[in-house]
Image (cartoon, rainbow, N blue to C red; front, side, top):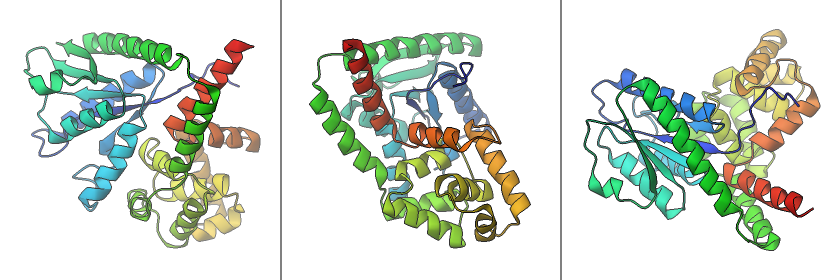
Length: 305
């Protein structure tokens, strides 16, 4: 294992207003900054505007948007919510976090007022007020570290292995399959159609590809088009490269370049060995709740030995 690579053990959902923004590009860039801070703290960042943005994904129906974003909120380890722009969506996401026992870090400028209802939500465990970006970076990292320590200590409280295993198996089954509508929406967002889309849809239905894994590839890693199709068909479904190229309407040489680009994007070497790919698939394409339960279970056993 490459010891220089930071191991990320949970997802952070970056929540912020997206509808009817006065300066959409600048606001989205700010969310990208929050994601960078989250990643520097050892978490994987999920940014809704990369997947369900009301401008770039305007064709998605409201229920699909709700299902996709809700799945990421409830599967996250922490929610980082920007409260500087009033938003129904942010309020809903914070309440979803409360319902599922997920801590929320609220981020807002010092000179802006925030609804007392939002501030009083029990899920909000940290409020990061900032005047400039460097101060925001430092304060947010500190808040993330405090939340991480609290979550770790709480998860370490006495829970029987049997209960943990039962929760793990239940969440594993939920992660395996997604509603047909969400799979179709993810394939649209991922710009995959034709024979490749049919193969991917069938793989999710049969459990060969975790539904949550498809969601991660499209949402967290932002794979699109041929890169997404080639990676799933070749590295997940293990189809021959010549067949993969035909299915995505490409030639083998171009398909190989797309495969290398996709591997690089998700953090694998372009020439990754099959065993490294297999390990990545196991550790990264399982939904965060199941991964957290795995870590809790195995860490508990190691401390007892």
